[in-house]
Length: 276
Image (cartoon, rainbow, N blue to C red; front, side, top):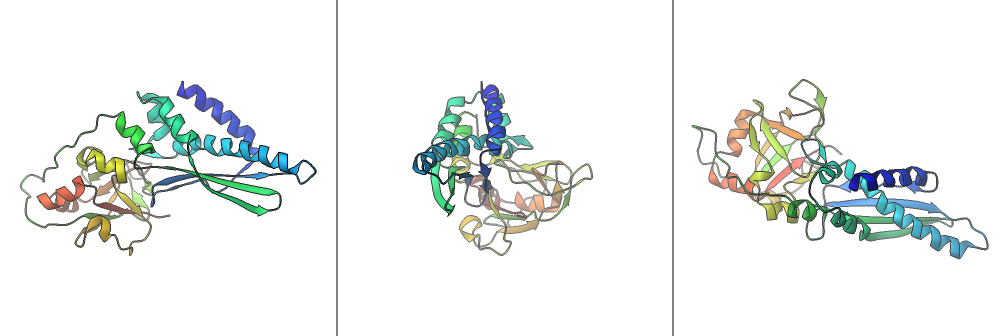
């Protein structure tokens, strides 16, 4: 059912391109919001008031339809787009439709006499959010993190900061940039799993996200990672889409070295610095 609706929506979007202009629809990974913006032109004649209202109503529908394209661009985990996952899972389509149909009006602007710009957003985290739909239908649980064998000593980091900016090399030798995703996967340079969504409390992921993304390496992140976080640089990426972050084995050992640091990961005290 979702596949047919999405196909229908794409057709409408193609037609809509000739009537409306998309303006800065984007994913705000920092504040956890997904914006969809549409500008409409209204002919300034005797029928202007009626035409303006009609175009605004159509633009509102177009802005919401645009979300299906945007969700195609958001990875759930390891290069799996959110919309593809929803289509292939048991998630109720009606819940996604309801979320999008009830997107919050963010702003109405009038750039000039004949233009109206509407902006809507939906939340990525919290109640009535994209994540609440994904989490409620998925069997999430917490797996206890363990240290590397023979490597267990006290370091007591209060959180993790991974600098993943710049071009990094994938396991198979391609130059790739890290792309944000809802469920972060971190592996070491020997392709061993360090942690993923199953090592973070489900309520933490649902309410605030598994990790916080930032574009500023100098930003004060103490509210997320505490006063003495482990700061490391990403070693590479795990795939060609940049959805898996790779760290060195030594840094992976530091992440999992003691209970306090493992607990920080469990409660989502993770910040990932990426390029804009």
